[in-house]
Length: 406
Length: 223
Image (cartoon, rainbow over all chains, first blue to last red):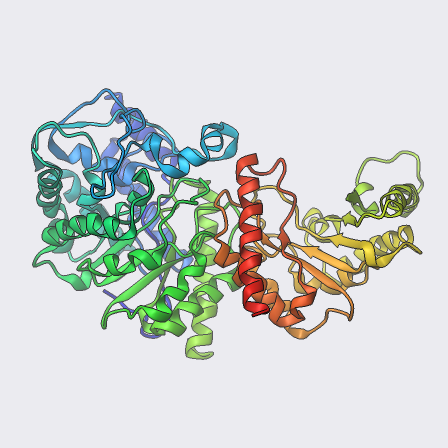
């Protein structure tokens, strides 16, 4: 994985705005039609080429494929980052209920369980705001959740091969050395109903084994693998009533161990891990503090850690790194621009944020990134403006950190 | 109690007054009556005057900073005319860049208009500092320009995001200002009005975070 050896590198958390043509092609594919005479595959290939070139032009050093292969038929959609995995797995059957309609589950002091999406604590506390379409808190379409009814096996070989080929072609055409591709972590993917596996843990490890195949494919192709695992942080809000921090950490370590099991033997220096508290535009008052889970995050066998630090609930948490030692050889990708506001971060603010981290962990170990994916969460034009300001802010910070020459 | 300033009020169509300046001063003379009523009642008067900053985005193409300052000083003088002789120690001024949820990439930097703002005969100045376009501008006060006896009300929570500011962030923001202008001269405030701009429950949660953050900052500043 490239480190910031002579300037602050820039990257982002994954999702970028889907071009309208690709959204149309996805709709046509769903309706088993062909969009404008071009096949879905052609539109996707061209879209990935365009989006990599655009990132390059803006000054994003480590671009992604925008998660374009993770299909959506809607402009506003917070879900493709994990729902794509349902299309690449056998053992799942269509379900009738959305994750919001599942019955709530109560946790006890010694038994942490995840409740329904509708029963999440921030959502309960701000029920009126979450229910008000004018509040801006949307999460896009809510399709019924699949149900696991048989043994899980990875069936996405063709899809991931196409994603990789599209991305590598685009990287080569843009002259970019390193790119990253996201894949969902088992702890985040397995949060759906299961009637086949006997225990929660068995189900979790089945996901780990199946997803390992996708991780290997991405790494074997020479790409950087980013594991998307909001569950490590956002499950906290999904445990009702609020558990003790100790009980939550124990619960979460089971998921981290399953992830590490999936990663066994894979090249850690090309694996980065993405933590977040959920990217919906809610108040987020029940987010667990970074301080309480940073140790759990660092137990993930990755070479770099991406996390939210560019929104008002987590911006102050740069101070965590005053006390927590980032293990040698590891990097961080703090979010310095965010999907959480339409206002475009001023480049000087971006630089201020980068400098705080660089001064604590060392300039070579910071890659400037976004809080979460930008695609599907804010207007496309604002998303691109945020990547632009990210690159400008990183350049300002680099000038301060390496002197005028950088 | 808030009342609108002449520059912000006068931005409407006019077929009666011969010049823009005449309309502006007519607004100033008329609004003075409301200002007096508020102050005579013993209340604090807050003058809402986004026009001082946000007019910048309403001039197309972008003017020079010098031309804009000259244009804006005419409006500041009209406001000073309206509050002439009124008790300055109960007048505060509110500057902002417009509270709509847009990208705000064409906001004029605070550095370019801080002197224009300070030319207003108020005792305290309220301004946005709690959103990502203006958060870095606390550094403007490193140059020590706040005149003696004046106060600032920086925005430390904002309507610009649904996310509720963490009290520790609120405290951090307050401390940056307090360390530059002195703790006695900072009143923790919001960027703009919250009503009508975020969901009511989120608005109230933001005021709660504001109070909690100010308590944290106070513990550090007066320990």
